[in-house]
Length: 274
Image (cartoon, rainbow, N blue to C red):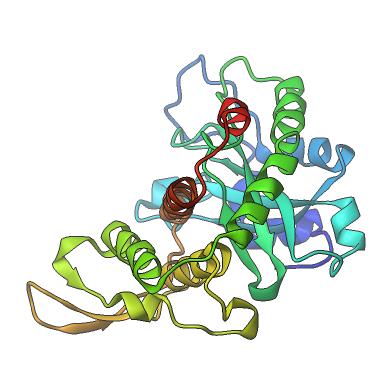
C-alpha cells in the first residue's frame, strides 16, 4: 500500500487487466467496452488518487488480462495528511473485462494503525454498480459523489462502535459468528484465536477494537484449527481473492452492526437515516 499516488505504470505492473485495450472474446454487441484505465483521470479530477491495485488469479488462461481487478483511491486531503486521523474513508473500484463484473464503486474505511481496509456493506451506506451497456463518464462522477456523501455517516457509525463496551460473552459471540462465515461447520476454530490482541491500540473491550481484531484474523489468516472431517490441523491462509475479500469484509461489518443495534438500539432518527 502506497502513501503516495500510484502512477499508471505502477498500476499496470500491479494489475495489468486495468489496461486491457479490448474485452474478452465472445462479448455481445450490447457490451460497451470501457477500459478501466480510461476512467482513472475521472477519479483524479474528483480529488481521489489510486494507492493500491490488484487483480484476481485465473485458472483459465483465456481470462488472463481481462480478469476482475480492484483499485483503492484516497482523497488528496488525506494523502497530504497521512497521520492526521486514525481512519480514512477511501473509495474502492472493482471491474473486469471478461463479463464477470460491472463497474462497482464502494466506500471503505482504511485503519492506519494496522494498514487494514474495512469494506462497508453496500446496503449500510452506499454502493454503485454501473453496467457496461450504456456507460458514460457522468455515471462514474455520480457514483463518486453519492458514495463520498455517506462518509460522515460511516464515521458516525465507527464513533458509535468505539463507545460500546462488550462483555467476554459478547466478544466470543462476534468471534463465533465470524468463524461460521469464514470456516463453516467442517472446521474447528477457537473464538479466542480470533480475539488475540496484536497491538496496544486494540487492547480494550470496545466493539471497534474487537471487530478489528476479528476482521484482521479472518482476512490476514494464521488462525489455527483442525478439519472435523479429516482430523488434520491447519493454519488459515490470507484471503487474497477479490470476491472473497469483499464479501467477508461486508459480512463482518454486518456482524458488528447487528451487535451495535442490540447494545445501543438506534433512535428513530438514526433508523430513518439508515
